Image 1 (tube, one colour):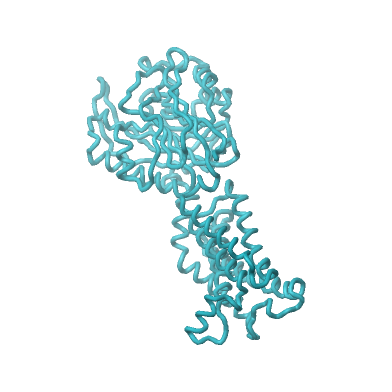
Image 2: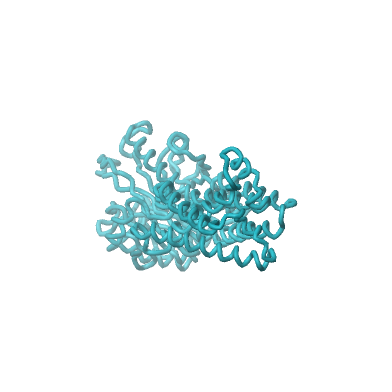
Length: 486
């Protein structure tokens, strides 16, 4: 099963200049190429910026060709126009959001190249969340890496290794947050070998022997501009030949995948499979049907909500793991009832306890799992990110949830079980309700104490701008359309 195919192109546009002469291209040249070879997403390198605004003629032509959404960022002064900045951008037929800029460490090389004095310009990658035709969002990065070969630097030089290490480390972190496509000017022969050496993911490289050239620049088959992806299987990769004098605007057609399957690693698919198998097993001759329903309906409802909002609100791997564990605990208790759970019976016998303690585990998880979920929602949707109030409010909401659960159990005992006290699983303990809420409170504290740092790292990697974005944004270097992204 595949999603809706869509097309991604990468194009070093050379400041909208004609290669060789460096004259400004005629009006309409960009649109004529895209009209002949339409794309859904176009990653651009060497885009000109004037006073931190993108080349207006370029943006207008992109818009008139159907790519009405643009995000870009200048990186350095242009060698083609002293009044301009030179940077990278992404144009799309569908909305762009969450721009992230990552700038590579520049070793500051200088050299005489073809009779001109060159300085190694700043390079990096610009990413955005892009809505693709089937309605999902993916991450697309337009990148431009250092042309070390132009400065006489060999592929095995330590400066090249340092760039690859920094680049692939950042790319791996972005992969952790979902589907990712890298498209742009790699400028390196050793790109695939570097990916195998420096990346922990297995990348699929497309357009391997093809080049993206700008306005007639002769192809350099040994240094390609290409597209790389961990998740996406190609339908086809084509080097398109635009009108005479404008060679080399390639278009990559990619196929989507299974939604959830393609947004995350196989680990999440494994967790989903485990939850579904345990849920199905729990429905086979449970001890009490009403108890099974009351315990597992929350698993089904939670899974439905997660899948329904996944396109817009994917969860961290840590939260998915905790939710999957909580779902297994609920399904197991629902099958046997908490008072008769075999694992609890074993613990009761081994430790000489007066009652089956499995319900204590369930109520501990009632605080442990929701604490991570509440914390993630507040971190991502409220002003509490980084606030000292994030922890206390998370704990308070978990305690409120536990109290609400006790009220539901009380009502359920009368409405579903006809007032049968066994439905509550108190096992004769008059303080069972207080124990349940206390354990949920302990679970919430435990989750925050044990997992907050891990959770923060995953949240920062997945949903916070890159390490250099704050400084760039403060200088109003991000531009979207004709304005700036604050």
